[in-house]
Length: 87
Image (cartoon, rainbow, N blue to C red; front, top):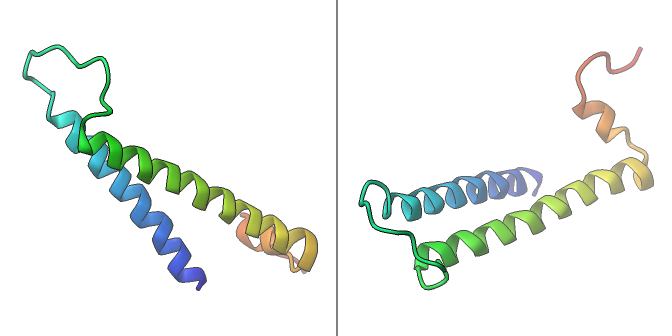
């Protein structure tokens, strides 16, 4: 499950990046004025919802790490950090 959640984070980041890039590319170099609202564009809607979902997954991810550190006390944050890992 842990690997699947990390893949979900990676896919969401890349998807939000790609959709945002394609939305920007539609206006790049055209010389046309940008619209006052991008809400009518499907790429904007997709980018918004992907970013919102990404924020939720990041908050859950940080919460799970803190849960393991503070409740289970299994040293998860120490295992994720750089440097010495113990004696």
